[in-house]
Length: 162
Image 1: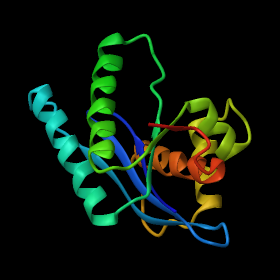
Image 2: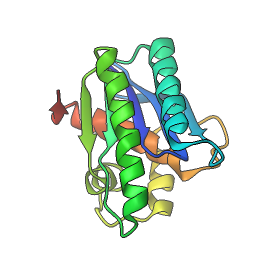
Image 3: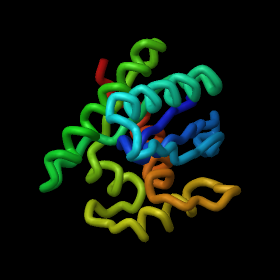
Image 4: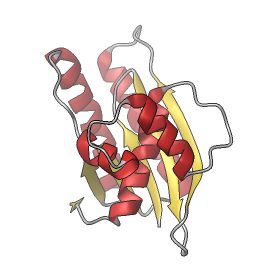
């Protein structure tokens, strides 16, 4: 099973391709932190995110998309923008006939660290323990995307939403 996993945003989008092998071990095929410039108008940023997701889907041909559900913070402007980016990302998955599974930050932390209140450092440490990463990762968004993919792999798509 090949999973495109997403940590959504509009400034930075974490994207990973995690493949679960027959023997149950996951392999990181691809990961990136896709960035858009704050100098662009918001609709252009959304368009670029959609193009990037479509490009990754076409290149790696995943079987499923796993995406983090939005956790509402006190900044509603940011939450609305991230919601719009999630809509573009989910649209690209469905346009490419890829089912979408969504996971809360709590589900992801439990799946990766075994503890729902794990912090970023614990998530990053456990991601390194769970899957081989052969490059330097600069942004948490990329680690978060990998963690989303590992969560879906562990859950085997029990939470598919179509």
